[in-house]
Image (spheres, rainbow, N blue to C red):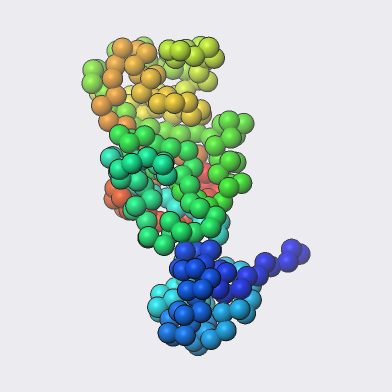
Length: 244
């Protein structure tokens, strides 16, 4: 049986973005930190990082944020970017401010460009991030594409051929599955993540994507109840669906 990791309260709260190591003792002195319903005075005490800690430890009478290894499913809206470095609105701005101070830092699992909406995962779990985006995993991603011109009927075979080449590249695309929804809409499922891949695939057939929305990642689907800009923290079972 593996040993349950522990952490000092001051270090834990600092890593979760609640304040610096010097801030946390002041928070305790002000009666803001509670453990099992009792105020915490000694923030140097170590706690086991168990699944129930978020319900046992509270800050300002609010449950503790999820521990390290958190995975967020966001309904990314159009107009925000996934990079930490770009100017303008970022997906991280839609999360609690303190989460921007978490260590390890939160990062998106792959990216959706500024003009693409839909299912986006964000995590501080580096190994999980790389496991999901690894080309060896061939995890399927499905997009609903709205097109400028009607589909001509040849796209299904072209995308499924495994011989389609994108402009400027020397390696053909892996076979992709296209399901026609209407004359101007289709669901495209790919297993790669090349730069602007979906938009470039349709451009290669003489069409233009006017709207793009990711609906699924692996076996995980974007909930209908999650509005643009909203997010939820995934359970371990939800995370396993990605690899289903």
